[in-house]
Length: 419
Image (cartoon, rainbow, N blue to C red; front, side, top):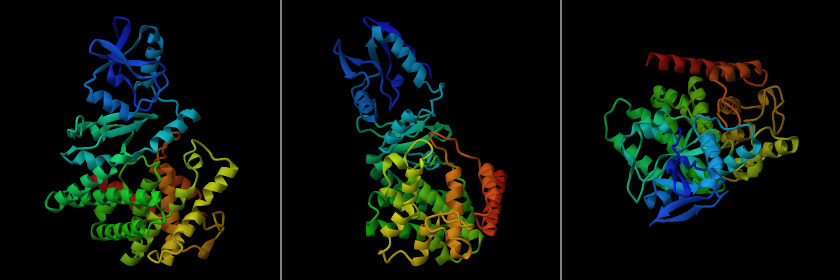
């Protein structure tokens, strides 16, 4: 979007929307207050949601810069325009983006877009390494969810401090759906359950040794197992949700859903699907102790960093070792999700029959979700590209399970086309 800039005395004026969230304008920014210019952002200061909310609360619609800074302003507006792609290959830009992203929580757009509700929390999107507002309550008033939300590119997020408000929103939607008789009732109850799962996993990653958080995780897996076993169409809806999941908590829930889907396609009994779901949901719990600069590094890890990252498996096993609520079978899912049938995996280099069926399933679900994930520094692979790559590495995976997974995804695409 191009923003019009015009001369206002000794200043250049432009709409407040021209200030891109998460950026550091290279010039001082002023507002006009009772005829006087007041500096509100210093050159090089980060402009974030808090600063934007404060300006909106004061009724600010346009901001000003010194006329001498006009060239920097023009370059800034051009650089932050949605029509100009970000330099995703700049390591420093990506690193700063990932650091900033830790203050936000990803939400499922289809869940929000489906509900004709107003919200008491702000919604943003991350796109091309930039944070942009989508809907923001002002002066303690509710905000409306825009109709174009579903078509917006990028990752839809809220601030971490708004997660409790989002949880109340989820609970309200679940209650409304339970009392309704709409055609999509089961589908959106399942999506709501997935969203609730993400908040629980995030709490668990923040406090991985909390027995209460582990209990909540197991309860949500039980509900998920009941849901997918009672309605396979709902399972396929969950599997094909389009997400940008560079967040460990979203990836963990995705892997739990994918693993459960494979379990259903393989005809596993409910108790085994639940065990598989628990292990898959907790499979990356050890990443909670991996240093952030390694976990969020933009690009390939060096050998030392990779060895530290691999330690998340052992750390995860250590965290749940004495938790009696987690079965031995679920623990093995956590310890084996990076093992490979040909012995090239880690941490123990297991091969063949040393790897349990549930561990093999989680390995496939984990790899597929990782390969189909969009990241700030790398585009996602398509399902076809990802499965083709996994088939070429078939010595690493259980071919019968991988074949079941491919067939299941094929039925999903067929059902979507028919719909």
